[in-house]
Length: 177
Image (cartoon, rainbow, N blue to C red; front, side, top):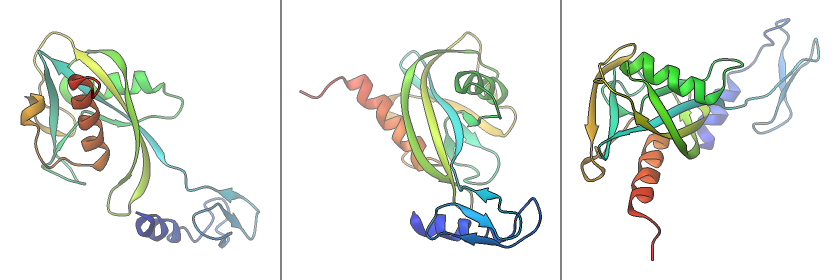
């Protein structure tokens, strides 16, 4: 995990404001431009996704684009600037599947990496109920299917998706006792 961050962060060499050389304070901390003094942080990009349920099954979508093209994923995506995370997840689910959803609860927040460069993400997952209608693949989705907790695919697109699905299954099974 650290290697990916170091590699991606190391690629930031020039200031986007003045093209001066960026100097690292060490590790993955902020970088400072030696020319104009601007400071840049390598913060994670926020995403919002949902475990959308209907009749005890969760909706997964098949990715139509890299990274992880062809793998199963939860509907969701990157949060736009100044966008509320709940509005973002509702928008993303509608864009990807055509479904309107009702948010039930926050399921979990999981850090992860995205893409070949391993850019850090902070992934907010909600538990949601699907409205009426059928899920139809749209936007960057190649397919959609409903899965019961005991038939979830073994391999999913991202570590945070596996974590969110595990959190959903734990919630269904109730507290361990």
